Each structure stands twice: as C-alpha cells, then as structure tokens.
Image (cartoon, rainbow, N blue to C red):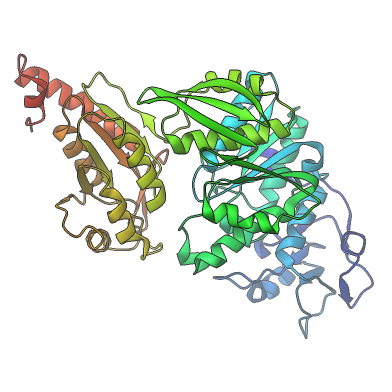
Amino acid sequence: MGDAVVQPPIIISLRRLFPQASFVGCADLRATHVTADSRTCRPKSLFAVIRGRQLNGCEFIRDALSRGAAGLIVDRPIPDIPVPQCVVQDVRAAFAEICAFRCGWPSRQLKVAGVTGTNGKTTVTWLVRSILEFHRERCGVLGTVEYSDGWTTEPSALTTPGPEIQAAWLARMVRRGAGFAAIEVSSHALDQRRISGTELQCGAITNITRDHFDYHGTFEAYQSAKFRLLESIRPGGLVVLNRDDPGAWALRERVDSSRNLIATSLGNAADVTAQLREESLRGTAFQLSIHGRTVECHTTLIGRYNVANCLTAAAILSGFGLSPEQISAGLEQFCVVPGRLERIACGQPFDVFVDYAHTDDALARCLQALRSMTPGRLIVVFGAGGDRDREKRPLMGRAALHADVQIATSDNPRSEVPERIIEEILAGMAGARPIVEVDRSVAIRRALELAVPGDCVLVAGKGHEQEQIIGAERLPFDDRQVVRQWLSRLTTEWNLSLPTASPRSFARVG
C-alpha cells in the first residue's frame, strides 16, 4: 500500500489515551511506535499482547523484548517481565484506538458508513460511493474487492483490514480530499475489534443469516458480533436495519436513544421503502420512498435482494444529506459490482452470470431472482469452500435445488479433498440428480454446453476472485475469464461444426 502503513512520529501517552488503564512498573508508557507484531518491534517500541484464537501474543513477548520493546500492553499483568506494562480491558480495542490516534483520528474528519451483514456489503458500499461520486463528492471504499482512497485503488487482502492498515487508508482518504468513506465490516473484524478506533456516522446491517459458524460457533454468537457495529456509531449517528430480515431486525431493541434508527423494507411499513414496477434480466424499475418523499428509480441491478441493497444505500445517503431525487439520479447510472451477478456477454444465445454467492441464503436468493425471470432452464455451477463451516455444505446443495440443472464442483477446497466436500453438498440434494464435476473449469464448460436460447447459467461462489486455493497452492482462476474463454472456444466449435444448425443442436457439441 505504498506509504499508507507508515506511522507518523507522534508521541503516544497511554495514560492520556486510556485514563482507566492501570500500570505496572511505571506511571505512564510513552512511545512513538506501537505494534501487535513482535517481528516489527524496534528499540523503545510498545508491544500489544493480543491473545488470538490461533496465536497467543504472550508467546512472542521474549521476541519483542529481544528486538528492543520497552513496554507491553496487556489485559492482565504478566509476572517476571522486566519492562513496564499498561493493563487495559481489551488489548485489541486499545490497539485499534492507538492506530487511529497515531493517524490523527481520520474517521472524525470523514462521514463514514460502516456496512455489515451476511450478504450485500460490497454492493451497498459500491452504491454509496458511485452515487456520491455522480454528484461530485469523493468517497473512499474499504471492502472485499478493493481499497480506495477516492483516487487510487489497490486489491484488498481482507474484507475489513487490520487497525493499522484501516487507519492509514482512512488518513489517506483525508489527505486526498475525500469527504466520505464506505467500509465493509465483517463479523470477524467486529469480533476482533478492528474498527474500535473508527467512528461511524452511519452503521447499516443488511441481513444476518448463516455464515462463518466455523469461527463463531452459533447463530447467536454470529449475530452478537454483528451487533458490535453499533458500538462504533457516534452519538446522534444513524442505524439502518433491514426490517424484512429477521436476523437484522431483531437488533432494533438494542439501538439506544442516542442514535437514530431508520428501517428499510420492500413489503412492510418503514422509513425507506420500494414498490417494484418491473423486473427483468436487464434491470429493475421501482418506486423509492424516503420518509414519505417518492421518486421513480431504475437500476441495472437484478433481483429483489438487490432492491433491498439499494434501499440500504438510499438510507445511508439520505443520512448523508442527499435528496431522493439525487439518489435516484445516481442510481440510474450505476453499472455493476465486480463478480456480483455480473453478466458475461460474448454473443452467446443465452444469459450467463457470475456471482459471489457462497452462502446458502445468498445462493437461494440469487437463483430465485433468476428463476422468476428466465423463460428456459436455470443452470447453476456451485460448490463450497474447504476448511470452512462443514454444516453449510448440505444447505448449499438444498439451495441449488432452485435451479433446474445443478452442477456441483470445487470452490476453494484448500486442504480438504474436493470429492469429500462435494459428497457433503450432495447430502442436501436428496431426490435430485446433480451433475458432479470436480474440475471447476470443466464444470463451467459443461454448463455452457448444456445451455440453449432462453436458458440462464449462473456460476456461483467465487465472483471477483482471481485465484483458486487447492492445497497450499493459489492458482490463477477467474470465473469470469474462464466463462469468456470457454464461450469463445465453444462459439468457434459451433460455427465450424454446425454452421446451419439450430441453437439447441449447439448444446450437444463437445
């Protein structure tokens, strides 16, 4: 990220920053460098001892000291350590606040919208940025696809970066003249307090369904992690909840009186609502109502769930001061989010989309939307990631039953045997006769070979990703490029083999 992670030489007084902290061996700890990575310690550094799920910072104290660390930040005093210690309630949260402080509390100089939810985070943040920029307001983005300071972008490493990188990017936005930021906030980041140093003017929860149970364990723990987003919203700030989603709407009771609640809905009474006018595979028309003011809208986004995403973005933008007319005008010109129901058009006589849907809820919603607008058959290529929530796999298989033809394949198998993952997916598809093809590229080809005019093919699970993780290898693999390559080759085969054949005959070539 260039110079974005370079910390300015500012002196930190932990006594001043954390007045409730206690100190061992000193009255205060002051430093110009604080890190949670012992390998980056240098003389006079402070080392934040974070107890993680896989790594315990206590194991690296000696390494930090050998590199010159002059003090520790801990959640309980550690005996027999020859340097002073600052004892705080939560080291992760304290470290995030230190990172924000060292960068000049950049979120306080921006209007920041934080968006969390099982699905929709990327689309909502991209909508917010796009509509603001349509009205000549510069907006940075931190999320699954990319990090942007409002001028330049870089591929992201995590949906929500760690505190050092996050604070540095927000500071970079301020330096580049951005007035707004839209950031995706994952449940992992909330559980790990990565945004504790970031103040939000608006926090939105799109939906809460099953995901990341390999990390959180239960739905209640996952939901509680999402709720932590509200802790970062400044007093007087805005909370946006999707009334149509039970998991998100259940959190309304936890919104205190110091924050303003805005509800969105497609079918219930709410502050921000939509009435669908027309749906097709080319886009959606709907009537948008914000606090009683109504405008007509059109978007190239497809499906009711994307209208729900538009409502969340509209609520955020309304809180930022945009009028319904400004929101509608900006929405009209919005194109596509990479890998989110992204159309692949290479002259083939059927529709092809690539989508990131990798949860059962996202896959079901995506297929239901396409099914309602597809005159022919709906064909889906899908899988499930390895080394992740195994209980989700049969649910993915069940969700795929919304398609007419299912092709089960590899996603990112990681260290697991792909065939075993597929077996667990098939357990949720009793009575169905899915096609099984372990090789993802070949699976995509089979789907395209089967398609005829009027059909629709969905390649789900990886979206914008540009690699496939098999074992310890990260192999180049982009669903969108693979689809284009196969369509190009198949079109050539069709033209050479059957120059006068019907489109249905094309499906039998190969």
